[in-house]
Amino acid sequence: MDRTAQRRIVVGVDGSASSRAALRWAARQAAVVGATVEAIITWDYPTAFGWSTPVVDADIAASAAKTLAETVAQEAAEHGVEIRERVESGNAAQVLLEAAEGAELLVLGNRGHHGFAKALLGSVSQHCVQHASCPVVVVR
Image (tube, rainbow, N blue to C red; front, side):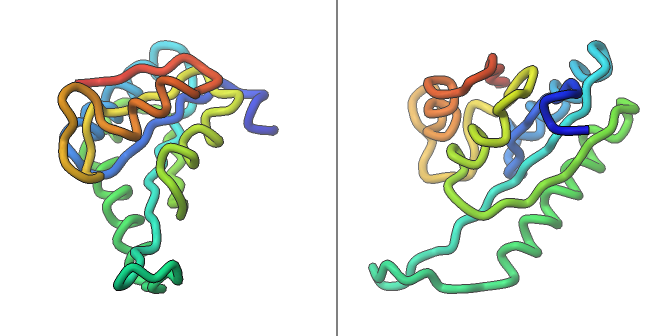
């Protein structure tokens, strides 16, 4: 079955309090509408000393996977819905927008771990709200 044939709710997870709240909300909503939750954590290679060549660190992907698994276990397991975990490298907003194509909803926290907190909405959430092809829920 392809991604667009079943009901999916995509949720961005980074381990922050607001992404944990977003995951809980997505799991509750999925239980109500009979959808699958696709929990996605993204990571990007850090650049070193201003060079455009990325510093490759396999531990980053492993750490991201651990954060995602722990967050899912702590925040969403009790809701009895199928939760698929995905670890992706790349720009968080772009990865989430691509994953949300054909989804019922994209659910995000209002602030995450990327940079300093903005006045009202994190930069990833802001970008996704403006460019998503599906409805977006931002959870505080």
